[in-house]
Figure 1 (tube, rainbow, N blue to C red):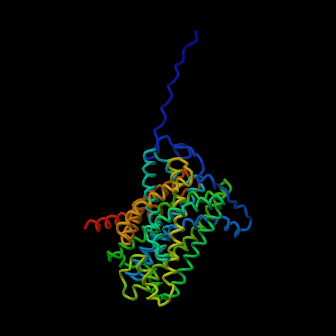
Figure 2 (tube, rainbow, N blue to C red):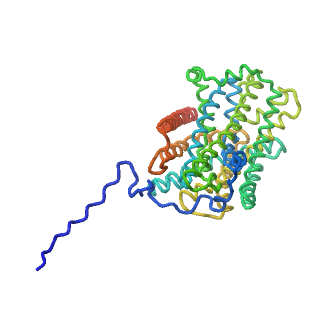
Figure 3 (cartoon, rainbow, N blue to C red):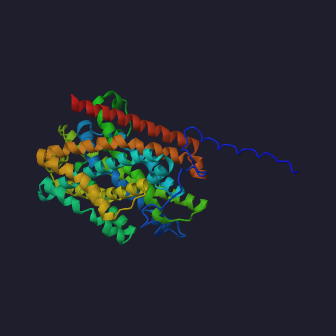
Length: 465
C-alpha cells in the first residue's frame, strides 16, 4: 500500500508593505493602465527628426499650453496689487514661484512620458477608489474656480474694450469653449499654434507698456533679490503668498502629464529619456515667457502706480482707468485690456482641456467633449452671473480673489502625489527622482503647502473680522 504523503498547506500571501496600496502590482500600480490619456490626439505628432532643432520644435507646444495657466487673469490682480503697493520688492516672489513651477512641470511631464499615465490616471491606479474620488471632487472644484477666473477676466476685458455689461460678457464666454473642440478636430498642432499666438500678443502688449512706463532698471534688478522685509512686513508676505498661489496652478500638473503624450516618441528607455529632456526644455522656455509677463505686469504697476502714489490699485478696472492718464499716451489702457482678453481666452482653451483630462483620468469616463466643456463652463458661469448681477464689478473682483484661494487649497493635493509617484522606483524605474531631486521636490511641496495654508487662514480671518 502506497503511503499517503501529507501536502503542506500553501503559505499565505505576504502582507503589503505599510503605506503601499493593497494589491499593488510588480510595476507599483494597483490597477493596470486603461485607455490612453486624450485618446483622440494620443501620439499623433511625429518627433522623428534627425536635426536637434527640428526635434526641439516638434516637442515644443505642451509647455506653452501649460504656461498659459501662469499668466491667467487670476495672476493679474495679485501682480497689480504687489506692484502698486510695494514697488519692485515682490519680483523675487515671482521669480521663486516660477522656479518652483519649472520643477513641478518637469516632474509632471516625466510622469506622463515614463508611465504612460497622466496624473489623474496615476492617482486612480494608485489610491483606493474612495481616495481617488475625493481627489477628483476637489480637482473639479479647482478647475471650476480656475474657469471662474477666466470667465470674469474675459468679461472684464469685453467690458473695458466694447462697454459690454459684465453680466452679458460672462454669458458670451459660454460659447468660446466650443473653439477648443473645433481646433482639436483639425489637429492638436493648430490648438498649440493659437495658444502661442495669444501668448505672443500678451507679451507684445506688455512690452509696449514697459517701454511707456520706463522703469528704473537698477530698481528692477534689486527687486529680484529676496529681502528679509518679505517676512517682517505682514501685508507684503500676504500679497507675496497670493502671487505664489496664483502662479502655481494645480490643473496644469494634470494637463502637462497628459499632453506630452501627444508626441510619438519611442517607447524605449532611450526614447523616453530623450522625450523627458525635450519636454523639460519646452516647458522651461515657455515658463520663462510666463515669468516675463508676470514680472512685466508688476513692473508696470510699480513704475506707474507706486511711483505716483496710487498704492491701492488692486482691481483690473482701476489699472485700466489710470494707465492712459499716468503714462500720457493714448491707447495704453486699450492695449492693457487687449492683453487681458487674450489672457482670458488662452486660459479658457487650456482650462477646458484640463477638465476633460481630469474626468477621464479619475473616473475612466468619457463624455462627448462638447458636453464635458459645457458642464465645466456652466459651473463657472452661474455664480459669476449671480454675483455680477447683484454686486457689479466690485463683486466680481472679490470672486476673482476667492477663485485663487480655492486654487491654493487644492494645490497640495496635486503636488504631493506627483512628487510621491515620480520618486517611486517601482513606478518609474531608472527614471525615478535622484536623491537630491527628491529632497528638493519634497521641500518645495511642503513650502507650498505651508504658505498656502497660511494664506487661507489669513484670508478667512480677514473675511470674518
